[in-house]
Image 1: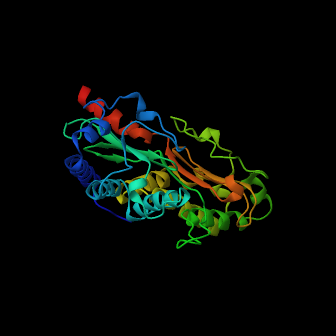
Image 2: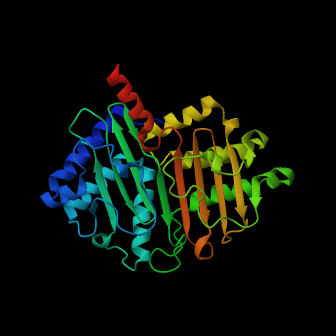
Image 3: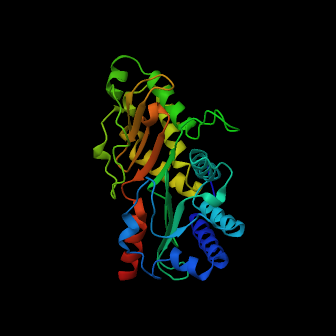
Length: 322
């Protein structure tokens, strides 16, 4: 997979933020922005996927032009597949609140960190129930983790979207992987009969793969199971713009796919409460569908070095100092 260069993604993101600022009222701009240049605001690493207010501009009540500008900004931080996933999370949340097809009632908060018109790094984020998108931008590219998408319900049972499963591919690939394992391989992968009630890393400011169970190493899987694990990892990485997703995958291949491992807890049948994770030295993936009798899903992708754009920030300030 190839995509537009990282520098072009940075430029498109900057242009999308400017377009959003142009259609907001002055008071909305004040709610959106931290002080220009304040990328080091404490809220940079503060996040949650639970309901409730956040700092920033509330999306509830935005008019059509403003929502279109925000949608265009969201698109710059994602591939087409990733953007569709985020839009789906927003639509499922409308369904949960009994407001399907009512974008004016959305309850998310958008925050601009730093100055997109300056020379330094800057970022933006969109947070709310079951959605957390964090973007850090420099001339060298963008970072988009932590990236969280949830779905309540995991499967819509009524209405025009009945049967829709937002995170269906994330669940089905993992189930195909675990049910295809046999004997000691499955016993090693399944670390508990009862799954945890939520992702294990929760909203930790720093990603730590050491919090996750060891699971079954990639090297101990048959080739068919290895390919499924690769597809599962790519499913998460491919939420990002293609250039960055390819960079992350290339890093994993260079380090060696034998460093990957997969772990599962809970039942194996569709509808059973379950959890899984993928652990690697540089990143982690978690998924759970345990709440509401196994009809309430969470998924997250974290990166040890890239969360909050830490590597880009380090590179920028090192270059400036030199």
